[in-house]
Image 1 (cartoon, one colour):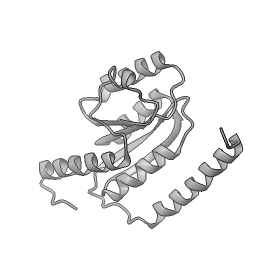
Image 2 (spheres, helix red, strand yellow):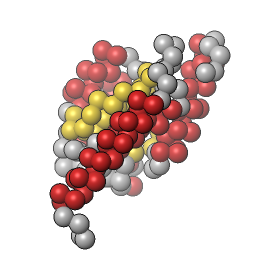
Image 3 (cartoon, rainbow, N blue to C red):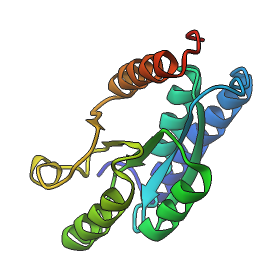
Image 4 (cartoon, helix red, strand yellow):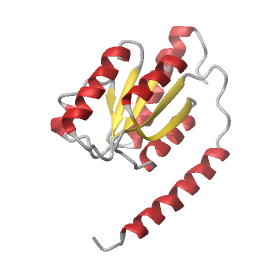
Length: 165
Protein backbone atom coordinates (compact mmCIF):
# COMPACT_ATOMS: atom_id res chain seq x y z
CA UNK A 1 0.00 0.00 0.00
CA UNK A 2 2.95 2.37 0.38
CA UNK A 3 4.26 1.93 -3.16
CA UNK A 4 2.68 2.66 -6.50
CA UNK A 5 2.21 -0.22 -8.93
CA UNK A 6 4.97 1.09 -11.17
CA UNK A 7 7.39 1.03 -8.23
CA UNK A 8 6.62 -2.62 -7.49
CA UNK A 9 6.91 -3.57 -11.16
CA UNK A 10 10.18 -1.67 -11.51
CA UNK A 11 11.52 -3.48 -8.43
CA UNK A 12 10.56 -6.81 -10.04
CA UNK A 13 12.30 -5.85 -13.28
CA UNK A 14 15.50 -4.94 -11.42
CA UNK A 15 15.36 -8.22 -9.51
CA UNK A 16 14.77 -10.23 -12.70
CA UNK A 17 17.76 -8.54 -14.31
CA UNK A 18 19.96 -9.51 -11.36
CA UNK A 19 18.63 -13.09 -11.39
CA UNK A 20 19.37 -13.42 -15.11
CA UNK A 21 22.91 -12.19 -14.50
CA UNK A 22 23.30 -14.78 -11.75
CA UNK A 23 22.04 -17.48 -14.14
CA UNK A 24 24.89 -16.62 -16.49
CA UNK A 25 27.38 -17.11 -13.66
CA UNK A 26 26.24 -20.65 -12.87
CA UNK A 27 28.11 -23.46 -14.58
CA UNK A 28 26.33 -25.14 -17.48
CA UNK A 29 24.61 -28.33 -16.27
CA UNK A 30 26.16 -31.67 -17.22
CA UNK A 31 24.61 -33.42 -20.21
CA UNK A 32 23.66 -36.20 -17.79
CA UNK A 33 21.86 -33.82 -15.41
CA UNK A 34 18.17 -34.57 -14.95
CA UNK A 35 15.76 -32.19 -16.67
CA UNK A 36 13.37 -29.86 -14.86
CA UNK A 37 10.91 -27.44 -16.42
CA UNK A 38 8.34 -25.17 -14.91
CA UNK A 39 6.55 -21.89 -14.80
CA UNK A 40 3.46 -20.06 -13.65
CA UNK A 41 -0.05 -20.94 -14.81
CA UNK A 42 -2.39 -18.85 -16.95
CA UNK A 43 -3.41 -15.64 -15.25
CA UNK A 44 -0.28 -15.57 -13.07
CA UNK A 45 2.04 -12.96 -14.54
CA UNK A 46 4.52 -12.97 -11.68
CA UNK A 47 7.84 -14.23 -13.02
CA UNK A 48 10.11 -13.90 -9.98
CA UNK A 49 9.04 -17.20 -8.43
CA UNK A 50 9.63 -19.30 -11.53
CA UNK A 51 12.92 -17.53 -12.28
CA UNK A 52 14.15 -18.17 -8.74
CA UNK A 53 13.07 -21.82 -8.95
CA UNK A 54 15.10 -22.24 -12.14
CA UNK A 55 18.21 -20.82 -10.45
CA UNK A 56 17.80 -22.95 -7.34
CA UNK A 57 17.45 -26.10 -9.44
CA UNK A 58 20.42 -25.20 -11.66
CA UNK A 59 22.50 -24.64 -8.54
CA UNK A 60 21.37 -28.10 -7.36
CA UNK A 61 22.86 -29.56 -10.59
CA UNK A 62 19.63 -29.88 -12.56
CA UNK A 63 19.22 -28.89 -16.19
CA UNK A 64 16.38 -26.51 -15.32
CA UNK A 65 14.51 -24.17 -17.63
CA UNK A 66 11.71 -21.80 -16.74
CA UNK A 67 9.02 -21.76 -19.40
CA UNK A 68 7.84 -18.39 -18.13
CA UNK A 69 4.63 -17.09 -16.65
CA UNK A 70 0.98 -16.93 -17.70
CA UNK A 71 1.14 -20.42 -19.23
CA UNK A 72 -2.02 -22.37 -20.08
CA UNK A 73 -1.89 -25.87 -18.62
CA UNK A 74 -2.23 -27.28 -22.15
CA UNK A 75 1.12 -25.79 -23.13
CA UNK A 76 2.76 -27.06 -19.93
CA UNK A 77 1.45 -30.50 -20.87
CA UNK A 78 2.85 -30.16 -24.40
CA UNK A 79 6.26 -29.21 -22.96
CA UNK A 80 6.21 -32.26 -20.68
CA UNK A 81 5.37 -34.54 -23.61
CA UNK A 82 8.09 -33.01 -25.77
CA UNK A 83 10.93 -32.72 -23.25
CA UNK A 84 10.20 -35.61 -20.82
CA UNK A 85 11.48 -33.89 -17.65
CA UNK A 86 11.95 -35.67 -14.34
CA UNK A 87 10.62 -32.66 -12.42
CA UNK A 88 8.00 -30.02 -13.20
CA UNK A 89 7.54 -27.01 -10.94
CA UNK A 90 4.54 -24.73 -10.77
CA UNK A 91 4.96 -21.31 -9.17
CA UNK A 92 1.60 -19.96 -7.97
CA UNK A 93 1.51 -16.31 -6.97
CA UNK A 94 -1.96 -15.60 -8.33
CA UNK A 95 -4.94 -17.82 -9.15
CA UNK A 96 -7.61 -16.11 -11.19
CA UNK A 97 -10.34 -18.70 -10.70
CA UNK A 98 -9.79 -21.44 -8.13
CA UNK A 99 -12.14 -23.99 -9.68
CA UNK A 100 -10.75 -23.55 -13.21
CA UNK A 101 -7.19 -23.75 -11.89
CA UNK A 102 -7.84 -26.93 -9.91
CA UNK A 103 -9.66 -28.66 -12.80
CA UNK A 104 -6.89 -27.82 -15.30
CA UNK A 105 -4.14 -28.79 -12.85
CA UNK A 106 -5.87 -32.11 -12.15
CA UNK A 107 -5.97 -32.88 -15.88
CA UNK A 108 -2.25 -32.12 -16.10
CA UNK A 109 -1.50 -34.30 -13.11
CA UNK A 110 -3.71 -37.14 -14.36
CA UNK A 111 -1.81 -37.18 -17.65
CA UNK A 112 1.73 -36.87 -16.29
CA UNK A 113 1.71 -37.47 -12.53
CA UNK A 114 2.97 -41.04 -12.76
CA UNK A 115 5.98 -40.12 -14.90
CA UNK A 116 7.20 -36.82 -13.45
CA UNK A 117 7.62 -35.29 -10.00
CA UNK A 118 5.33 -32.27 -9.61
CA UNK A 119 6.57 -29.57 -7.26
CA UNK A 120 4.24 -26.72 -6.40
CA UNK A 121 4.71 -23.57 -4.38
CA UNK A 122 3.73 -19.95 -3.99
CA UNK A 123 1.61 -17.85 -1.71
CA UNK A 124 -1.55 -18.33 -3.82
CA UNK A 125 -1.62 -22.00 -2.81
CA UNK A 126 -3.66 -21.73 0.36
CA UNK A 127 -4.21 -24.75 2.58
CA UNK A 128 -7.69 -25.26 1.13
CA UNK A 129 -6.38 -25.26 -2.44
CA UNK A 130 -3.41 -27.54 -1.69
CA UNK A 131 -5.68 -30.06 0.04
CA UNK A 132 -7.44 -30.57 -3.30
CA UNK A 133 -4.23 -31.06 -5.31
CA UNK A 134 -1.91 -34.00 -5.88
CA UNK A 135 1.82 -33.33 -6.10
CA UNK A 136 5.18 -34.82 -5.19
CA UNK A 137 6.20 -31.88 -3.03
CA UNK A 138 4.87 -28.56 -1.81
CA UNK A 139 7.66 -26.09 -1.17
CA UNK A 140 6.93 -23.02 0.87
CA UNK A 141 10.51 -21.82 0.46
CA UNK A 142 13.33 -22.10 -2.04
CA UNK A 143 15.28 -24.05 0.61
CA UNK A 144 12.55 -26.70 0.54
CA UNK A 145 12.77 -26.83 -3.26
CA UNK A 146 16.53 -27.24 -3.05
CA UNK A 147 16.24 -30.04 -0.49
CA UNK A 148 13.61 -31.93 -2.50
CA UNK A 149 15.61 -31.50 -5.71
CA UNK A 150 18.77 -32.84 -4.08
CA UNK A 151 16.91 -35.84 -2.66
CA UNK A 152 15.25 -36.59 -6.00
CA UNK A 153 18.55 -36.11 -7.83
CA UNK A 154 20.23 -38.65 -5.54
CA UNK A 155 17.40 -41.14 -6.18
CA UNK A 156 17.62 -40.63 -9.96
CA UNK A 157 21.41 -41.00 -9.94
CA UNK A 158 21.31 -44.19 -7.85
CA UNK A 159 18.61 -45.69 -10.05
CA UNK A 160 20.59 -44.95 -13.23
CA UNK A 161 23.90 -46.05 -11.76
CA UNK A 162 25.35 -42.55 -12.27
CA UNK A 163 27.65 -41.22 -9.58
CA UNK A 164 26.22 -38.09 -7.93
CA UNK A 165 27.47 -34.86 -9.49
